[in-house]
Image (cartoon, rainbow, N blue to C red; front, side, top):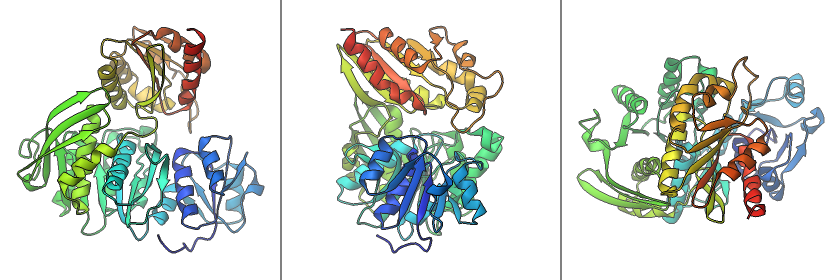
Length: 466
């Protein structure tokens, strides 16, 4: 797709992470020399090895080729022995986002940003363009159904990628098209304030290539304000949402209005209006949030020169991404889904979708809070959203990149949810969730950490207690 980079070989520290493995695969597929290391094996590492990438388990200075450019994510601490060795040798060290930008060079780059919805919308775009016969490259932080991967190097000149705002690394991108699903404050451990978080999105919009376009969801207050700011500076802006252009202060000729939405379990139908044309589309996934995501995808297709009605038909090709209300199995009338939701708004959207899928059944959630800082900042909001579940079993906080904060535990949320309990041992928590789920009910493993591994435990428990 592109000529080789001037960076030589690449070594990824923490190569098994969702974002890191995708970029490593993309660069390797483009002919770059790629190695990596991680603390433990996993499915992502198995895939990388099948592609011929050398991956070492365990961190050691000897793992780092002396000629390599070292790629890190924010999760890699400066005390990591491989990073220490690379800095001592004065090797080039770049962030994952910089490596992804290298993989995207020379393409029509579409970057999807937002506090939530990035993975689903990126995957939806990849699937819809594929259905239109466009072989786009993509880097998505989850496995896209039908592709069985989160990374693909295509023949055509379109590149789709998530733009991660968590550490402001999305400012390394210079997209042709930027789609922002929402600007809802998160990652305050990094930004420190709501105002700084919102400013980062303004800065991201200003990274758009000259002549490019910004697409925002007008139903989200933060994204709508971002669109207005970018337009006031002379930028081109499209918007979409459930209200009319004038009602939400958007430009009439550049606004897509959503209406007549019908939601069912595992599918949805909607109509939208754009420039005096009415367009119907059907999705093979449920959830109102996915209908909104589809509106953004329609506008991306329009900006890429695809007839909107043809793009609308192509959206049905999208069948979900890994860990986004992903069906994991059913035993004796009990269904199990796995979901990445780790922010209150994501929890709300997932539980709405679950309620539709469950019908008259109960919804049981096994939730692993992600980050001490997020738990402290949003405990009351989490509790409010979990009121929509029939039972919630909380496990201990998944620390990820953080050190513990005194007094911050899962009890901060659970103490405000009447139908809940805290079970520190993850496996025991999974067994409790399995036992709480009856025939006709839905169980969801939820969170951005290791809780996803408990799906197998729940299925096994169901099978052995028939």
